Length: 394
Ligand SMILES: [Fe+2]
Image (cartoon, rainbow, N blue to C red):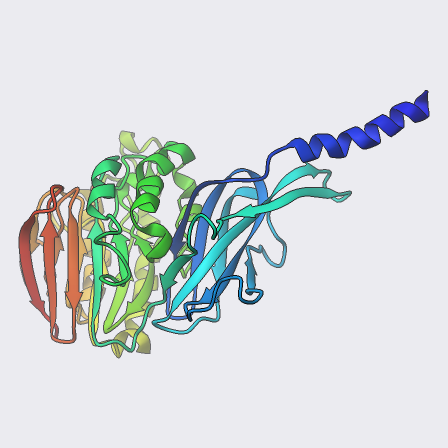
């Protein structure tokens, strides 16, 4: 009888495991941390899984023409198991289009060091959907074009419309940058998906490099400390740089707007020392040859410097502005105030020797950069052109 029960259990376990469904794509993919030679693909599966990305050049061959190289997510050589997948694709050529597919295998049984059983693989199917396609950045180009959005505060419907792939695609833009406060707080993964990731993926994000600058609101909420898991960067921090065409872009983080001790900060924010840390990093960036030799120098910072304003803006003035004023910045793109505002270079309200353009909330700003001029066109939520500004390159 014992043998019989053992036999039944031996047969029943694999059958029960096989009956479980494969891991499906719950959201994504979207492209992060793109440079001239690499990009990172991020997506979410509905159950725990291991994953990989296969990449092919955009050379006219069928994706099934040959076996494509596989890229795995690894943590110091170990493949992690989870629902959120973040795979770095490296060794690429500048300004080159690459096709990619994502794959995952669900974890059916995890007995730690004893054994782990996986489902059959499942992924983006090229029979029902053509492979995703992304173009790496190119410092050798004499121009670059990108789209900026900020302060959408849960209005994913507007985001979806303004950044729709009919307009925002690789033929017209090199990248998209969200300049903060895309949500009011990051309360959960579902919340971030619903209001930022899902609209972005539906609009443009599988096929277009997306960069993000953290807004003060993205510090808030129970899931706020997981921010970098969804938005990996070249530095592993919310402040980083990248180069597109002639433009060297510095993405800064200004932390929270109120003093750390304010009751609204719930004893959770320690941004005074954090901004000191960002300022030390910024000093190294502006001293670098990559920065100094770039024809155009652009800064993205959600909260504009404000010497007499709220604490966050005042600290940005104290810590970041002196460094930036010595660095030959051509323009800073800011957000936060939910309205259009242009401070010209030398304006006493900012103390900056470069212009600061605040893009209004729920708009799309298209920026065209060449080695002489930076041209900005701002479109309101209906897609109507409402502002045009031009800044000379120094
Ligand atoms: Fe803000």
